[in-house]
Length: 310
Ligand code: CP
Image (tube, rainbow, N blue to C red; front, side):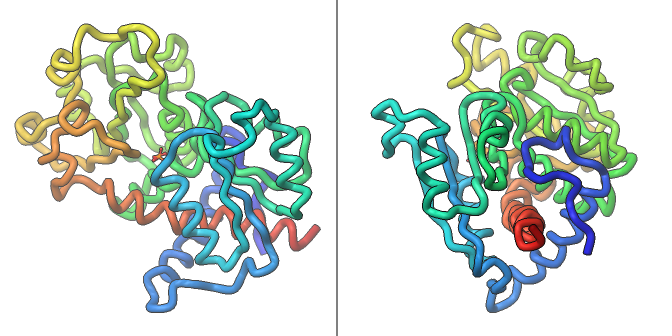
């Protein structure tokens, strides 16, 4: 049976195109499973997973938890805000205590870039990065590109623009890697203050004009303005941001093509997207969330297969 080329899922940067193909084929199978009357398989009855969330989450946390339950794994959930981290316990001590309870796979969201990578050098369990600071969010990029493949038949050759707060986004970097591995053309669009200085070295184009960006693309992946990560003002006002980079129905109607609208969530409604766009037929935002469960089942299943072989 085919296997992933990596031992952990720390970032898309470490994956090969064949890994993504394998994850998508496995996700196709699990998507069929979760649409059956009985949405569960016994594959992971002998596997225990700890979900460690050091930062808030709705979609990723619930999606991982559901994926694990659909695979019949035993799970434990850890939220930093209700834990002994608040008493000063370190990341390594926290994880080693959890691992002593015989845990096989760690799913971790952490506010610090490289937290999963750091942990992988100190522990034996498999690690899945559920978002590390402004660095990578690999499962989001996999479910995003899987959703493009589902909607448009293929990712190869498609033009995708990532719009908004690229500077603070882990979704942007993971999407750029995932899209390029699959042969898509990628542009970014947003205020120059929210564009990382060297990002065009990754081979992506930059477009400052939102209308031109939308006219160019097949897919617009719109990102949230991450106010909580901003310690200075990056643009004069929300009103100005909306005028220059917000997507509303009038703007979409002025473009002579039906582009696909995506957003990883949570949405600042009325800022980066108006509700009539977020809830329109062009939007696949809720399909992304649905596909997140199948994608996460696929990744967990493939990493668990490695444990069973060891
Ligand atoms: N897309 C995403 O990561 O959302 P959450 O922060 O709610 O998990």
